[in-house]
Image (cartoon, rainbow, N blue to C red; front, side):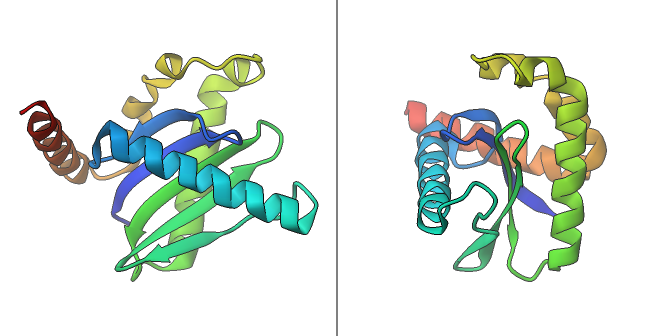
Length: 148
């Protein structure tokens, strides 16, 4: 599976871990949007168990996986042609890897996103490194454009 971008957000929309080619501004917009629609779903359905599973925007699909214990969303952006079963398996694996590494930090009332930066090494082992290198190059290019 080719994941173009992914996020780990808390239920307030705070990004704990982000890998995106869209730059920081776009990432903040998206994380706020994701949090808002999930909050809307929980309020409309009047419980914390129901959430939006995915959103399709153009040729991309944003897939959500949630953890109610730590109140986290795991989100992957990929092609809308990617099979849902593959996406669900990937999100579940990412969730397990993240919680395995950061369980102690996740129970703290304040979660500093900088403490989750080392998660990239796990992600690199899980996803195709060539894809991540391409994503990194696009990210660097977009950041350079922002600086100009």
